[in-house]
Amino acid sequence: MSVDERDPHSGYKTTGHEWNGIKELNTPVPRPVYFFLIVTFLFSIGYWVLMPAWPTGLSYTKGLLGLDQRASVEREVAQAAAARAPWMNALVRTPYEQALADPALMARVRDTGATLFGDNCAACHGANGAGAPGFPNLRDDIWLWGGAPDTIAETIRVGVNSGHADARVSQMMAFGRDQMLPQEDVRAVIAYVRSLSAARAPAPSATLTRGAVVFANTCASCHGARGEGIQQMGAPSLIDSDWLYGGDQETIFQTVWHGRQGQMPAWEGRLSASERRLLTLYLLDQQRRRQ
Image 1: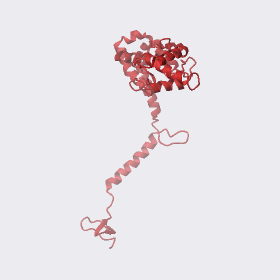
Image 2: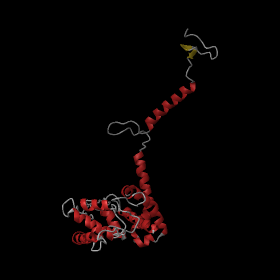
Image 3: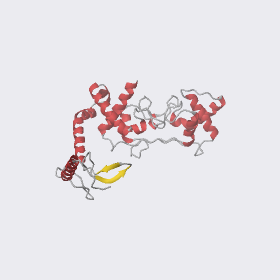
Image 4: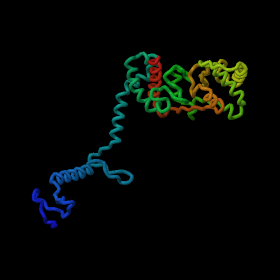
């Protein structure tokens, strides 16, 4: 077959390829394709000249327009901060109780606080603040270190076991692992503690008697004589239904045997004083709205 052969219907030459009687046409590229390729090429040249485009090692070509996305974002963030400044400054000056009673101010706290909480706290305490094993629930009225506004704000500022100079420090000792108590005493004190809690788990009287002695000699100095907890030490109450790591027998055994040392980062230096105050009000509001 000759490559000079022309298709009688289209008038285009064939390429000389044929498959089962089907001949391939040497159809020219449509002119609009060339047009758009040229336009695209010219656009790319213009973009390279006008916009930041080419890396130069330590920097990049700035472009004739001098556009900088980083500078744009920084400018937008600064504008947003300036827009928030009036009510954020009012937030710092307003006492907690007065702020909580101001509907307009608290509407802003809920809106901005939700974002601030999600960006900084939700990874540990959950998106809704309900907590998880080892991470306290922030929506109830049970606080390890106290639920007064200034106390919450201070906990946020300095953290717990955080390394901050003023950090709150608390640790549950490993009574079994470090051979401070034999396993029989550990089992007995667990039974006694579970009998104190809201679950009121039953146990033999002899076990409870032994557990009460162990508790008085070993645990009461931190958790209180009745197991009510001591907030100044971050020691939780053992007589309610709220358990930081879990209230089943095996989890409590792991807690007593191996000990616990929770951590919370210090947010001073990461969040401004006004942002920490905003978070405090947000948490208080969430607790109040849940009740």
